[in-house]
Image (cartoon, rainbow, N blue to C red; front, side, top):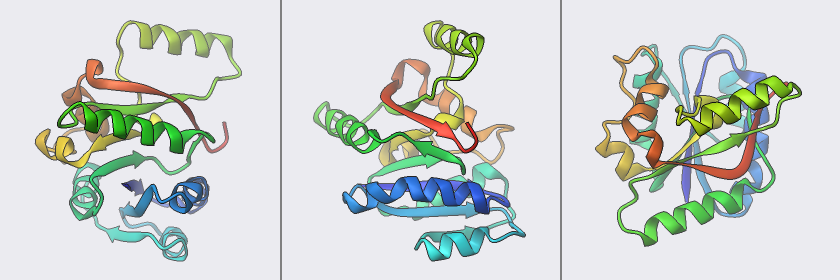
Length: 190
């Protein structure tokens, strides 16, 4: 089972899209909980989270501190960090389960996984994405991050002091320890 963590700020529309995409995972028994780590939204983000049954953590702390606090609250052994507006593709449940099973059979999980991006309408963008992946660039946070809670804790989680805590965590994991899932993720409006 996984705990999904979503950092928000005035994200009611994009959060609703992400939560709707997670419903099949909850029905399948994969998603144990969703924790929304909010930074003082003035729109209906809290209401959307409440109606969907999410745990809601409101804090004026920086993003890294909020994500770290949400991860500490998580009840599942695996964490899936998503941005509001992230919409995993239809096969995401099978891919996440496969990755978790393979990781657990190979000893303590020391790898993480991200989704593939949805193809862009621009051939240039698609070519640049392939090139970046080929040369070992870190995947952008928009692709989500699936990581064992024990591995996350061992790495020190998201750091409030990092200017970009999501990329900072990816750097500490290391590109060679990040698997690219076959399932794709798009952002609301793609």
